[in-house]
Image (cartoon, helix red, strand yellow):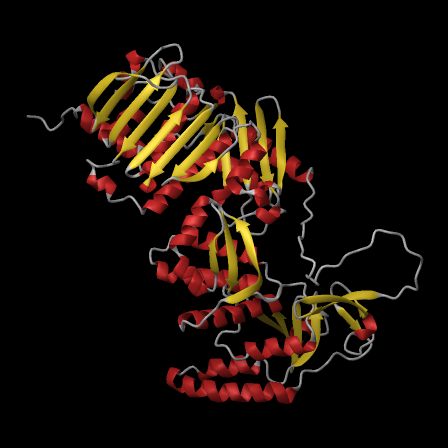
Length: 625
């Protein structure tokens, strides 16, 4: 007997299920896409245990005729296409005819459906790909699927499912995308009897964005409305302040089909190139209307990937669409303040009588900003530029005795350790960089200038302070010391369902990092404590950044992920560039920098200190040829 055999239908369906049905969210996606293709205006999804034990999808669409109910569960049975020629211009979300057969082969499915013109509907139960019951029934027009015990007969697939809350998060993400791609349909998602999403279905995309992401996001977007000969692009592009650390907040649709495309994301990135910092990704919801003849959606079993016949044209159109939206929207950042926040100035709009002019400038005093005359700055006379300090007196010299005593103590302490580590040369070199230095000043409100013998030392204040913060937070974390600092005014903000679930699961970890919070309604949390709140670090920005960092981490050992989180906190909490420091603050920074083992780089590897010798300077000025 030969080795090649024809697989039976049940085995073929299970193999197809392995390609199409990966988890409960895959089932929801296929069933909801069918509801959309059926012209539904209202779609309700209910899940239990993340959809593993129970999924119910109900719509008010066209329904399935009684004669078609049983054949709908056959493999390659579809109402969407008739022949191979139809593949060249697909206008529906589903078309393969594999979804129902695949779902039914690995679960128990109940289908109740009625077309509007018929007085009665149909019911069918299919379990493991086998029809168990079929009959007529009374039901409203439309279709209801109930899927139970997913992967009950394929334990190999079942064991790869994640926790219920994680699977529920995947389902929520799919429904959120469906709602954003179809603002004319009202979606409702319920998980374990709790409503997660209810979109209005009023054909207003901005209202849907509000339903999915909340008010804070909805008010920081710019409308996209662009068209040329072959493509129409609509949607909303986020302002820079709501950018995130991953692409999870980007929803790209082609003819209302949610897809992923490198061509599209590359064009978006190029449009935002001068607006965002490195490793930041914009919020965007965008729908491209393209003639189906110019795209191929039959690339992947899950229909998530597409190909364009004219990639350059698509790239150009998307770039211009996003650029026009950003240029047409004021990108000046809004600052919301409370009455007691003394850091914000208020300017009178009323015209007052002329007063004697006296030059003013801003003085930052450990996180507080006040307006003060120049001659009030530590008794020194002078003016202040945005880039450097100009004074009538020589710039202050750091007290050599003070630095020297600190250095001596360090050398004594470190030498005792280095005798064991045979690393004393490195310690002496590090300490000698600071001993006996003179403080020359601050350049561009970013770099600290020191003269050390015949060397010029330049210190990046943000990178240096970031290293200090990182070492301090890491040490406390590893010693299980408290990092949390109670906020005087707790911060309330909205998150997605997936983020809320993630915070619930990882509460102990976040608490140890210093973030104390609790749920505040379905899609909000109230943050009561943070690990570091000085230097005006934006509480929400720090917290969101840490969430993004941890949710996007691919490290298998979660206990090691804390390092990424501490990097993020240190970066956000550190003193920023373009901040003027007084001499005492500089001295403190130098003192602390001299006490750590690695003062040379920030946690990301950027240098904190660079040096230039007198010889190098003289060569630059051609004093030495």
